[in-house]
Figure 1 (cartoon, rainbow, N blue to C red):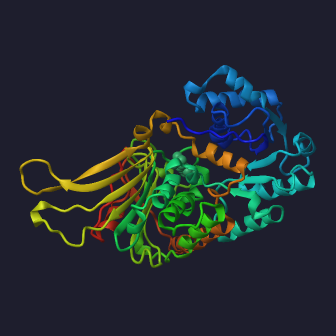
Figure 2: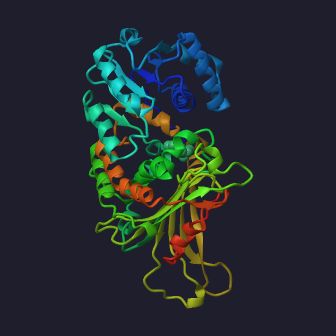
Figure 3: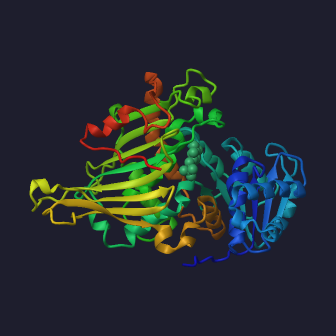
Length: 483
Ligand code: BG6
């Protein structure tokens, strides 16, 4: 299968924070991969802007190293890298002062799409937005891309939205949640809305419960300063897991268009019931062979959670009392993310009790190997009478669609191309972000008021024992976190 690559028109993309970690790991390697695939044409301008005083050649050295480190070796063609680097420029810019802005304005071309990637802390969003206007850098219909964390609570998210709204319309603002750029996450919409098979069963009548797991093997070492002020709730649940929940639970939008999709997601967030404390388990990894959480951060008494499991309810007709169990954590036993829909048992079994009975399970794997797996019940082959077993109808995208399907664009490169094309479907709207914080805030406030301590869990485990009990209490079990 050959994937379809539709080239975009030439554009000017300015990356504020062009010397930063996100630019090095994700944005620049992603742009190179799209160039390599023929999607980014010659004639684009990618402009790095940051405080560091250096010239374009010095930045190109940095970008070349990033490509070598983060792009697969098969794509290290020196001629292609050189041609890509020719389109790169660097301008030292002072986000809080006047330096560099006139030069930047002089670089921008009229008549091409202009995008400004704010790959900087949210504290600088207002300064950048204001200077883009004051120095007449940006054209009227330019686009800006902003990264998470989009605030740390409802009040700060509102302030950020208001700051950006002073200078840009909502249609110009692309709030990134890179989980929405993952191939399987979009496939979730295709599976639900392009097949007649699943949607009739996708409700409280047929679904017993849903599990959403985003498990990571890595700890927070190296990012302890940021992470300790956030925790799993702010870092992962408020955004990534919430988005996965929305796409799983939402009503079919009337069209695959930005506001139609985002309206439906917003309704899910607004329908979330407040969480009672007994439906949440917070954990913090304790000492193992590697440092414990408390050794990875500065505060030796930190009460920040590196693991969270919770049981949610979406209060609407479709999901009436169907539990959605969410969990995410660092230093777990494997890197594994999936959405698993557990269907109910058939209402009546025609087989003897000793035939056994199994319920259908649909799992949508986000990582590491993207694909879907539907477990169906069949008769165990052989002469042993009617005994039921469940077998997988397994579809790894790479196996089903050929090796090229495994070479899917990384979430960031897909999203950057969507910015250039002007498609906001996979970006969060301001009201969505605010609704997510409005639901999250009271939960976090309650922990702080009560002075709750997260439960310790062993690195390399599936989290604290209480997370298992959360499901056991309901007569259910988590799916194993497997590599
Ligand atoms: C980021 C979080 O948004 O997502 C990190 O800040 C987390 O803490 C990362 O590790 C996970 O992303 P991915 O794509 O590796 O699952």
